[in-house]
Image (cartoon, rainbow, N blue to C red):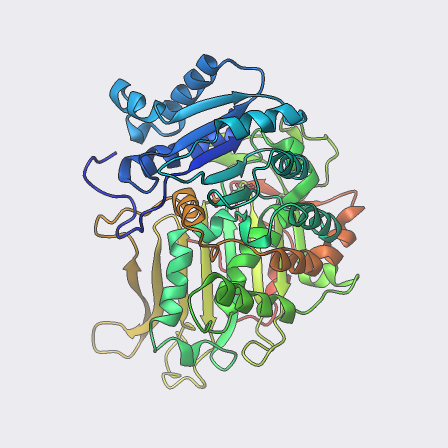
Length: 498
Ligand code: BG6
């Protein structure tokens, strides 16, 4: 960690706050939240007078501190947490012991929340399994921690936000019975990726984009997240979830709304989310039999990744040997409005694929005719690629002349790496936590968006619910059965990341 450089240039100052983490000894806290908080305090993105209050069961405060210190070294070695740095961070920490099911825990949290600079601001972060969200909200209410007369009170909810439309509605109702919608921050870490925000700037701060951004010029759009990791230690959750819920209903559909939305009237949370919501409302609804035609599911078999053998999904710890859970899902959506009528949006994501790449590929229509027809190579349709990770940036694929006495064509790519010149790319959790502290909900999903996206995928989930078998792809490859059929009529077909 560089002592001099702020992680987020030009960031706004936040008020001192009590950051209360439920599940403060859990995986998310260890891998993501604590490293983000260390950096944020170091760089002044979290006010230096803030407190981090961990709610932890069955551990002493000493054990918990030791756990956090060890995991910072393990998961964020780049922070270089030597004794001095650790001491500087550890003075912000405080632990509240307690069981989430016990009312007394919330009373203790209430006592731990301090007045800082005259205000009792509190951010409650639910880094816990979703079945506890409602209970925590209720406990906070009973302990009088929801009213905002002494300072702000905000609750942060992690995904999965429900498992289908019905459960998402129930969860929204539970939370909204306690908190006002403006106090609820549903995190989708994809919206915190700087490259995703860059997409909005690209679209709405450049006048050359808008005239092309529609069905007249765009053939189809692919939004993808390919991973090399397998299910890891998360079989219990993933067996219930699968790739459609885990990645498409949440992250990729959110990205789709940003790609497809109309320019908002202003850059505020309500205006942006209103436009995203209009996109979701225009997404064509699937009928029960559409799953066969518009969606593909598959599961990884054993294979090898970067020269290392990896087991099949069904051989992973905690996975049923006859599991038909999809580790790859692809869906072809249509958005029935004036801008996008007839343009396929294909969203796909899979684990244990050949590469870890996430990108948005805008494929343009073919040139109306081929002027250079007497040569072997036809022009390749233009493509604009927003690489979300790794190597964030924007790439425009064009045709150019081959050097020499010829009009033969060759592909060329214009590259605009996002973080090329030593700029730090802030981690999604840093951006999102900072936004919660500022009270800016633009990059968080609103209740209606979440319900609408569940409503869209629900027919597919139902169609796949009773599946007893599933097609397989070899780990470490792009050999997903039937995937090409989803790109029927799309210029260039499936874009395998390179
Ligand atoms: C999480 C999913 O939300 O996103 C994981 O639950 C997935 O299964 C992860 O691996 C991918 O995030 P990223 O930022 O690595 O693309």
